[in-house]
Image 1 (cartoon, rainbow, N blue to C red):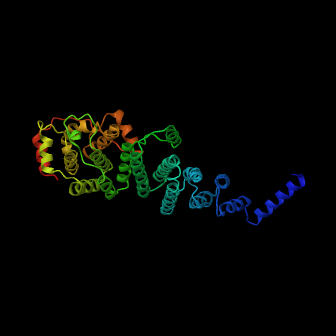
Image 2 (cartoon, helix red, strand yellow; image 1 turned 45 degrees about the vertical axis):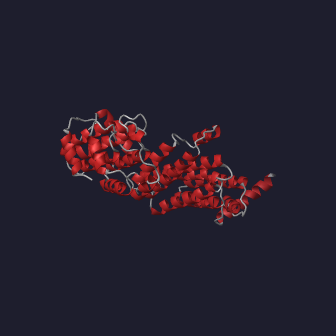
Image 3 (tube, rainbow, N blue to C red; image 1 turned 135 degrees about the vertical axis):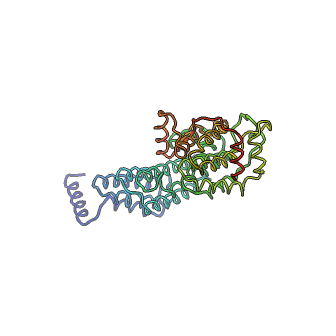
Length: 401
């Protein structure tokens, strides 16, 4: 290009800018307006959008960066089915929301919900064509929702983050667990995709456990009950005394949910979840389970529903029942230690002891508990004196559920 042509181009760009027209934005809109958006064109639009987002942030025009060049462009890309391209801009959107200290309000929560819906629709559109790419994009979507949840926790008004985003993430993780159960094969491509998506544990039990954690923090008891109802009850092997296998998945998820709800002081939903579970899902006789719980000769392991019933009754009383709480946890510790991530469950029970009974764990563990709770992973495990007379527990159960 000659020097004269270059000058002319700069003059035209300056004239357009003076008239309120941005040539890059014009080009971006032109690319996105194409009826049949090719992959190469979508990537070109992505690069322009990323450039404009960064330029707007530097200029201090934060709403333009997040709404015009991130959210609006994402909607257009996803409506045209370009989920793979959009995933990069979705990651940048959350990053900029944090950088610019954009508040998490109702409008932004609705935008995140809309992006989630559009992205899932686009991702599922390629499932029949490329299963590996589908699984990769599902993991990236979960990563996006986790990032958005972290932003809502930092810059929102709700403790532990937006309830709506918790629900979106829980639904996503549970759906992934179903897909994982249906496809247990592991390939090198899938492992690479997991590494790219920042995966730590995408096993079925890991996904289900994380899903009920977020359903609990979303205060969505009905969703937990609906998911538990799809799982089988405990087998003889899983209820045998000193069983080497993990407890029944359905009961493990129930216990994890209620321990978390109690640790964040949500007794209302913990009580609702357990009573509804006993009424609509549990098929065994609760009185027989209570007798078995106190028996040392029937060859059965402690029952999860009975333990949770006692725990709820104890937490609803006063701090004087702290020794009884310690006794209950000590007697059920063998079951908790065989569940998924027992260290997290220990944090939950530790925090329950601290909140309801002023039972403080060792000083070295206190900071760990507080950090875990701040990261929405909860707090758990109890260290405390045991040796309660079983007759006290029998009386507690008779007055319980």
